Image (cartoon, rainbow, N blue to C red; front, side):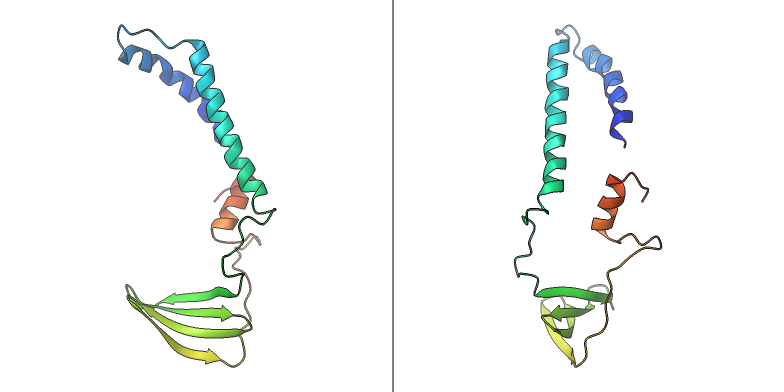
Length: 138
């Protein structure tokens, strides 16, 4: 984790702050400890929310999971072809600025698998967060 390596660097910046203030009173150790403690509390709250909010269901999609983007292909600077999963049906739509057109409704849904990297780790933001929390590389 990068935090233990960054903490000593923060303490190295403290004399520069005191010199920049000139004749002003230097901040006491108590103020510095308050600042560091407050920062650690905020970081702990963010990590706790990131861990426990998905477990209690606070991150449910608003549509109840009925709509899902299966795949998307860019065909221009601002145009895309998107394959949507709507319930048990799949619909191919064209998306352009200001309009969405149905191109085709598939009779048989295409088989889909979640995007993964070579090591079996999920791709995208969820995979990046899992690798980062596990101490892995990008």
